[in-house]
Every structure is written in structure tokens, then in C-alpha cells.
Image 1 (cartoon, rainbow, N blue to C red):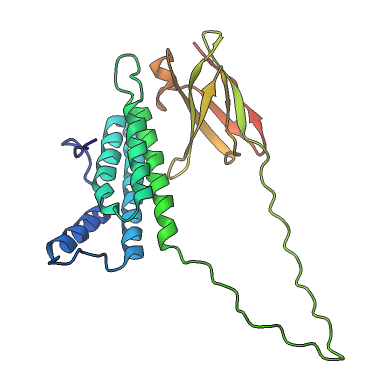
Image 2 (cartoon, rainbow, N blue to C red; image 1 turned 120 degrees about the vertical axis):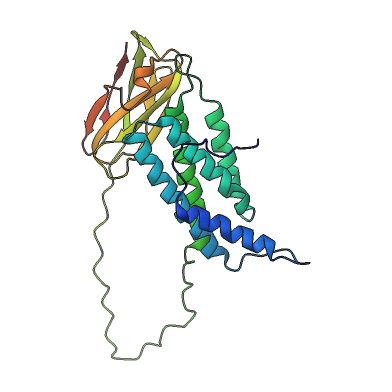
Length: 262
């Protein structure tokens, strides 16, 4: 599927992304009989990752402060379409982009209008997944242990004292779960997305709804959240963060939050 650039009037892409594009064009233009090669693949991947981070942060501002869901979606869409051909050496990252585009295309309309809020969320998650994949290329590999043999023990040597063990980090057990009903009946299928409130950069978490039940397998960070729900027949006001009245304050540990849609 061919992707077109973001529509006119949308915010410009961050400078890091232009730098990535410029580097790719220079490499192509200076190629002669040999196929062009990136001078430093790890540095290039980091440049693309940093550019996508800037795009993500800009899109979050557009989404949350300006409530311009279509603008955020177009910004994410244009950035991912621009960097995809630059990642031919990272087929796994390209596959993540293709999967994200396909998922956004399948988002059903909300009350006859494109659900840009949900589409933007999906591409936001795609950007995070691509950046995570790219980090596997430019992070330093773990050092191998030295093959030196331990010194031979001599009579009279004192037994080495083991260093004190660090206390194990306690993780939050379980995750958020609950029941989603629409006009008193369990929602057959859909998604529950929770968005952090009060954070400099909002974080989103999504769980599938099946026969009215949803479950976040991993524990969510403690804090305040706004909840949006998507699915067949769900009123539009529940699908947007600026109109959803669903709020909750999550404390440590597992929690139950039932959602009644009217």
C-alpha cells in the first residue's frame, strides 16, 4: 500500500527526520557502480529512532492539547511512511510499520465519521514498537566474561566473603480488569484504552474486550487515567479522551474497573 505525505496544514516533521532523509539521499546520489552502504548502521538507526521520538512527542501535544486527532494521525502516518524505505536493512521494523498501517486502516468509523483518535493511538503504538526494535541495533552488546582461570588456592588463604545480596525488586501483581457493558449488555468485542493524566508525555495502554471482559496482563503504572472504549455501537463520546467521562485513580496492585456505557 502506497502512503501519501501528511496533508497540507499539518505540523511540520521534526528536524531529526529531515536529517535522516537527507543522509539517505546523499548516500544514494554519491553511489557509483557499487551499491551504497550506510557508513555506520547503528548511528543511522539511532538517528531514525530519535526522529520518531520527536514526532511522537509532537503528535502527543497535537492530540492532547489541541484535540486535533486527525492532525496527530497524519503526522504519525507521514513520518512512518517517510522512514520505512530507509529501513530496508531492518525488515522487522518495516514489518511493524506495515502492520500498524493495516491496523489503522481497519479501524471502523465512529457514528459515520473516521475514528482518527483510535487511528492515531495505533500509529503511536507503532512508533514505539519501531523505536524499540531499532534500539536492538544500536545498544551495546553485553560483554563476554573473561576466560581467565581463577587463581589456585594456597594453604592458609582466607575464604572470600560474598558481597551482600541486593533486595529483590517487588513488582506489582496482576493488572487492571473489569466488565464492559453497553446499555446493560456485555460488549461483544472491542478495545479498552487507558491514557495517563498529568504526565508530560501521555502513555497509553490497550486491552481487548471479549464477551464484555477485558484484562491488562501487565500491571499499569500508578496514577490517574482517562478511559476510552471502541467497538460496534459504542457512542462517539466514549471513543475520545476529551469527551469521555470515564476516569479512575489506580493504586498499587491489581484493580477492577467496570465500565457501563449508555
